[in-house]
Length: 159
Picture 1 (cartoon, helix red, strand yellow):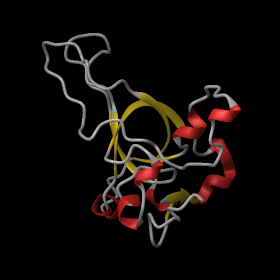
Picture 2: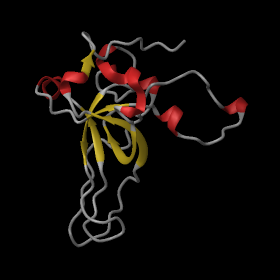
Picture 3: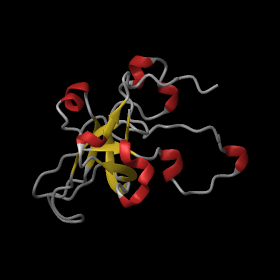
Picture 4: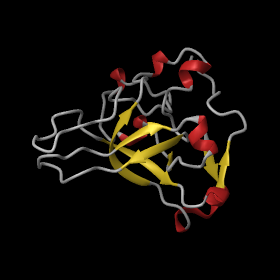
């Protein structure tokens, strides 16, 4: 988990960018996070991620959507993570859900949509998982990044 030293300055310095991406990972529901080990595999708000841009033109043969994967400890140490997650799915959805059907407890998860990176051949249309909006802070200057001393250890019990 991370933040920026200059975040108090606001959007004048760093603006979160909503991007259409496929979230690649193993955890697609908060109930799957039962301990620190499973939390380390989930993509959540303020986690480091690696963004891979889309290839080709959407709707044409060969198109592969952009995707994000959770950055490994080695990628963070090598400073190859490209973004930090700014918002979780629960605050990005923007859809109305009836009060009696909604759990309003905050969930910092960006649910995985696929367990592997999207692929396609140059002669076919993309028919895989549809991308979703994920709000990401780009990392322009690693000297501005404040990484947690012990990442991915936030409480896993929401009750």
